[in-house]
Length: 212
Image (cartoon, rainbow, N blue to C red; front, side):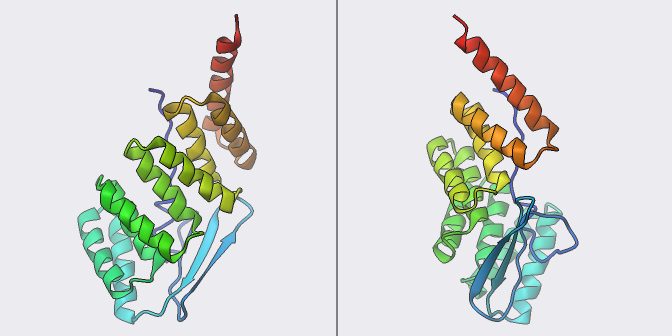
């Protein structure tokens, strides 16, 4: 099987670490609202305002530092505590799902993402991460639907675009879908040299298939 590194927003979901360059970030605030801001490069700033105590915020930040250091067991335990204390905090459920995915606990990862989507049905990162979980589980059509849902909500979300291209190329053998999505992704992220190589490879394969 051809290898294609699958991008995720898992580093983006190391929330509240503003000094790092990620595709999404979250904030804890005082009201129960969330706001998604799409930047010109196709990345996101997701501000979530949920009323929590200082102890919950401290636990959340500690858990994210653990995840950044690949301390998944400790990070998961602390994020479970955060989701129990602040069940309406979408970001915590997404980060918990990402951590579960890192230890290949796909069932719990899916459950956490579905909870996040109950809270925020239009959350593009949650849909993208759910697609990754489904792909890992071999549920390729479900993965496709999740990526397409993320792109329907935010067509400029190039992480989901690239994931959909890889899914169509490597797992679904849908050359037309793969080429279309790779080209759209390459237009959005022209500096990705790997994508240019994949496009050339795919065009070559399609050309060989079309020859009599």
